[in-house]
Length: 179
Image (cartoon, rainbow, N blue to C red):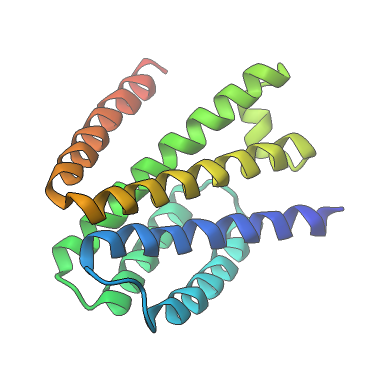
């Protein structure tokens, strides 16, 4: 049964990395993925293996988060060959969006299932699988919607994403400060 949960973790990590490529690509290139989609797919698969391996050692550690973010930034630099500043800022914005989605989904799932959110996040069970599936569904939906909106008006959406990211950072910082 443990193998099943690690497969789910791998698939979730793969989706997160691939959606990061889609998110960053919406800002960095005008055309569709083209030949880069295979590179993004392969890079996401390898990165997901790395993340799953790190999570087997210790899940939710600060080192893992920083290391994975560093790998994602390097991967975006390699994939898009864009300016360094954008390849650093965009994955950070994506990480904030991902954290917001994961936090909201885990909180509401815990509330609905009447379990502690920490228990839901730190123990492998079917409630966690449900939480992961909902979270990744919302992530895909939000990234696809953002990509569609960016195709119509890139400056309009950039401002909203920046405002959302800044406001979430202050909100999340306030929650952590209260603890």
